[in-house]
Length: 471
Image (cartoon, rainbow, N blue to C red):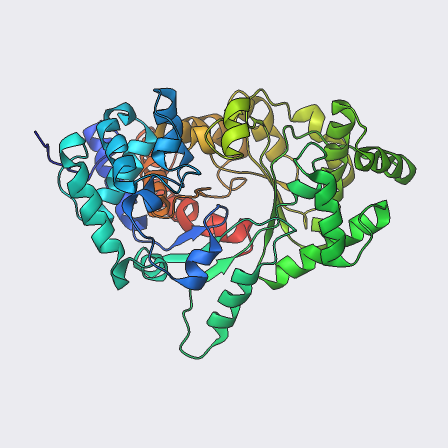
């Protein structure tokens, strides 16, 4: 028997009636602010080509590793969900999701998806085995209309700007097309920018690393098998990315370790990692040196630097072998920042013109390491609760563990970091509700005035992210 899908207007707000009333007022003041999405992994071809998404499975299931990691954990084969399997019947894949939707109870994925179902597609019954085809047909039929093309959805949800993430080896053709579209009289004015993610040519343990350097050489004309040519190639590509709208770089290293080697030492290490004969420690030292090199380049060209460490990526070797990266098999790991960042901070930490945004998957570091670091060094800011902690409880823990030491203004608002396009407004809605609940609690405890809470709510939802990412 189908049950109603009803999004409560006060969801995620505090349970205490007086606190909830204030939180509701704060939320209503920011709910309709434009969305600034400064870091994520949506596909720029969606916006450049503006083609229909296709069907419910292609839009909401196949790109979302939050969804299929849960299903896989319960024995559902990824092939049956359409992951790297274009032969699968998308309706059957959707039925698998619907049949197992109970697995997502009380998870962020459930909140995001229910928001999309109700707010985007107007569905008023819960997803389940008996409503699977109703969902699939309703969503797929609407996706075929002009109102559900990528640009229309971008405009509908008030997205002011969205940043995608590309490798230095990417031609950025889609971004070039979008830039031309923005400049055309009467052209679409949605702002889609890129971000420089150099991991494939920085991490010696990245698959195809040496072949990637050969390609890097071909693209830039610099000899990327020499240290000087390699650094020059990075500077060249960073300039090109900036011309395509980039305001940031992104670094997904296993750890935030940094190093400050002499030129002679760096050249010798580079020769080792490009030879293909190196130890794991030498690979880690090279990544460490490159974080410091990238910080220096950010000081030169003004690109904001994001460091996303602490993920043990591709933990499931069998899944990686069959499905490759980003298939839900990454796991958080312990991460140390104080000692690891010191070489970089000794060199650049006092530069107010440098902006480095730190993220973590290790929540034990919030109060002990990250908040004290960001609360002192001019170049550091704290990124929001990320990935596994991009959840109501994760967001609350972040605010409670960092605010006393770092304040609000050493943080950078919210970013959704998603591949699932329609989860963007859903995720921003969750962040705004949680932040307004936290602020209301501070007011009720007489730790913040109500007018201050109103200003902070605006800053957390909109102002801080624009400033931090130079948008």
